Image (cartoon, rainbow, N blue to C red; front, side, top):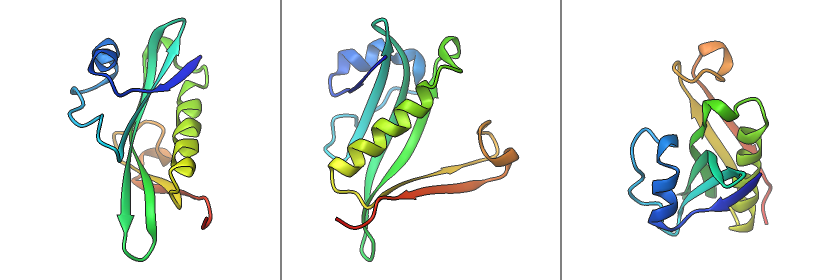
Amino acid sequence: MDIRRVTRSEAVEEAGHLFDAAPQRFADEGCHLLVAYVDGFPAGMVTGVEMTHPGKGTEMFLYELSVDDRFRGRGIGRSLVTALARLARERGCQGLWTATGEDDRPADDGDQAVHSWEFGRP
């Protein structure tokens, strides 16, 4: 598996089956799209957005995670989250966080939840 940050519109089109709607701002400096490829095929993606809080600094918000049904159960989602966390650290983010809702299958028994991972101050 190969995970790459995508900044070209052609790569987004190739991975179109992974999105509910086509991303509009994937090339913005603070918006990140990572795609996992298995044998050259886009198998999963994660999007992250850098958000700055006046009292906390910049954190990465994990906005969306998707793995093609044919590739589930292979650790692709976990690898994508790990890659986004690595990118967040490289960019000086204080942490990574996400929120899950009732429709998110992996969420805590269907309850809404917020999950966060702090990296510590640089």
